[in-house]
Image (cartoon, rainbow, N blue to C red; front, side, top):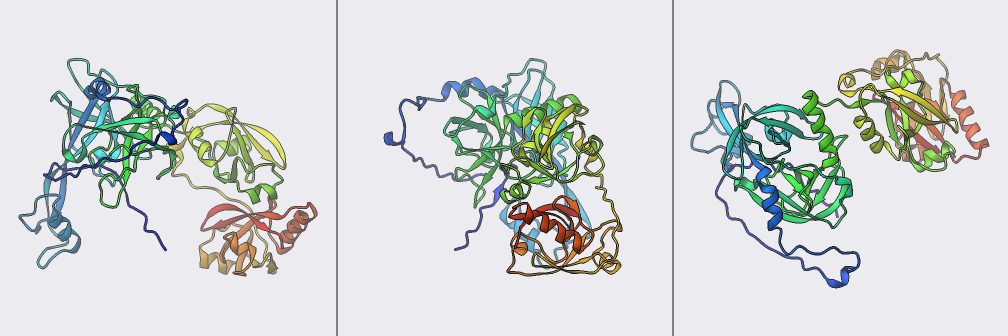
Length: 496
């Protein structure tokens, strides 16, 4: 039976409307399921913690000028189901284009103060909208004591959905500090605070349900919790029992937009670094290594005679810091700045956290031996629009079949048909056995094999020679570097 995944939503932009809320409680801890020697005490009350941190938690109201067709049907308040229906399906005499009229739209979110001088953390989508483009032109902050202040945007980071605001206050403001999210364990108590569904300040408690969740983006590290998080909670804090912020409430998994006990908070160890850069520069400044990487699979490790499938496989080295340092396609990064690299995820985050311009030691496995390179990191934000470079020339040679694939050198007709770069060399897969090992590993007609056994291939004889070498070396597979729609990827194909 096919399961339909639940939609992942950001619990933001709740409008203050009247509603009936069904409250239910459940869950009694079974004494048989706990080991008394290891379990911590169950709090009799969270009231003292609420009193401690609530003054630093804020409600955020944004006001934005939006446009809509001038012929919009009157009588439907913003946010009503009828408005959404007619916006999607239209109706007779309702223009879908043409003249536009503008009106103000308000939305709500949450946040928390991190300094006495008025820096406030929230979600980027609270102030910039779900599309990241519609910037709120008025942002109002309300404290638990009823005090209201206007806020300005200091900086935002869409990649982690974090925004930093600033208010001016004559008196020092109550604030909270970031904790170490890496110390949180599954089962630890946590408390969420914010402004759910426009109902005002609210507190919910639960536990850490899971760690290191990946939702989207490259740099995210989410804590999953069953503490109730709803629309309007976005940007609010997730507290540990010592009153430290260990997460920023960002998203929920829900079939109806309400809490079903699966909420996600961006880990504080990610947020604190982003906030520090936004405070100092007004934008993020992430380190940039300048390589395309992929995870190392067990069969790829075996094909390269590596003991374990750990590290990050370098599939391409465009112009950038890594190329200057001598890194090559086919290298496996096993250490960065003195610490081992487990996979691409860990490497990407550690490079991003490293200071721009810092020289770091990067250890790679090359031809079965470790090689230490010193790379001076660039800035990712400045490099994201750069294009990867490629090189080489290709002679016109005859085609044939290897590893269940019909292969041919790239011809001018192939370049024109598939819009291939003039300097791309290799063997084009023109046909493939759908029952063969290469097909099972993901190769398809149209792929271009540019390397085999980490050596360039420009002819069928080159590929056959690499296959023969792998067999003579007792290997079970041969490592191929392919290009598909311009993107490189290593694939270990079992030998037949």
